[in-house]
Amino acid sequence: MILIVDDAPENIISLKKVLEVNGFEVDTASSGEEALKKILKKSYVLIILDVQMPEMDGFEVAEAISGYSKAKETAIIFLSAAIANVNLITRGYSSGGLDYISKPVDMNILLLKVKTFYRIYEQSRALNEMQTKLLEEIEFRKEAERKKDEFISIASHELKTPMTSIKGYIQLLERSLDKEDLETTRIRLHKVQNQVEKLNLLVADLLDISKIESGKLKFNKKYFNFDKILDHIVEIMQQANPKVKFIKKGGIDTEIFGDEMRIEQVIINFMTNAIKYAPDSDEVHLTAERRGDEIYFSVRDFGIGMAKEHQPQIFDKFYRVEETSERYQGLGIGLYICQEIIERHEGKIGVNSEPDEGSEFYFTIPLHPEMDAKP
Image 1 (cartoon, rainbow, N blue to C red):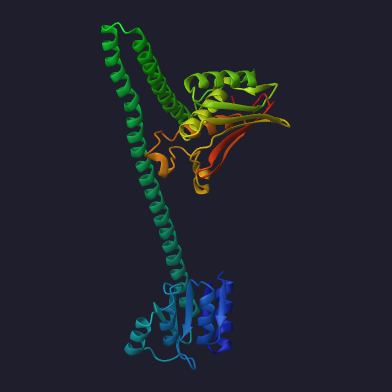
Image 2: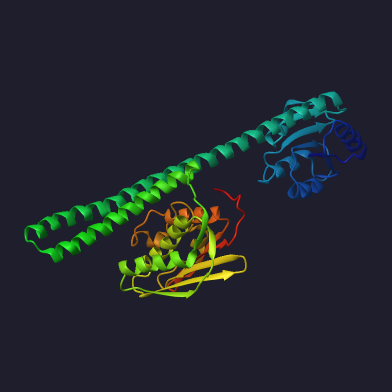
């Protein structure tokens, strides 16, 4: 938009008409004071400013505009009926003007200058937008690089821990075998098996991440008994964690359509996290219910919980709650994989949690989704 500032109505009318005929949007002010009020409220690409005005001349208006952060980059063209001299032109430039036209105005020259300033403005705006986008992209590259480095560091540490344990237990096994101490050998073999399973799960998660990123995470959907696989999982988890009591509530009591192995993967992740983040608790509550045309499943622990600000991000890839990252190991990809699995079942996943009061992770999936759902 162009602002014309002139105390002579006839000048405003003629300039406004010519500019509007040529497709420019025009606003007007009949005094310096009125112009300053408008500049505070609106943004202008160009101000055509008369020099000789009563009370506040054009130079004073320009100097005032230069103090407004909103308008200090706005181009100003001075109009003057006085004969142009060096002093006048010098004052015009020093007060913030970029050009000068004498009255009577040659409309062709004015239009040429207005179009030039508009072209410069559009080019400047395009450059600023490009610069902003470039800076955003650079920050996104930097953040992605930081997350990648952090992930590699965490992954290396997580993989190294069970490998170190396995190596240590094997050395102890050799001593037990030398002593023919079968009971100790059996205990240490069990510990090696636990570490191998932990290593297997870590590798499986890393492979799943790679498959998700490449769009190759496969699903084998069919009807299966949800309660049956839940009982099986609880039995295995109970054997591995004899000190924890798993309390089941409700049941589905019908077959559901989905990938049995992937749903089992989500349930095990929820239960493993419940044990991991509630080390001082001896209870984990499991709820399975049929709610209309969908099933609801949740795992409730009574552990450390988490603050509200973390909950929307907890399913993001590589996200880990900073306060717990040092105390509790993990890659920050398990829940991300769970979210992908549930969404591929046309379901929803979420969490309810309070600090120091525990967390409840849940998912819902439809009982009978369309058979032509994503494979």
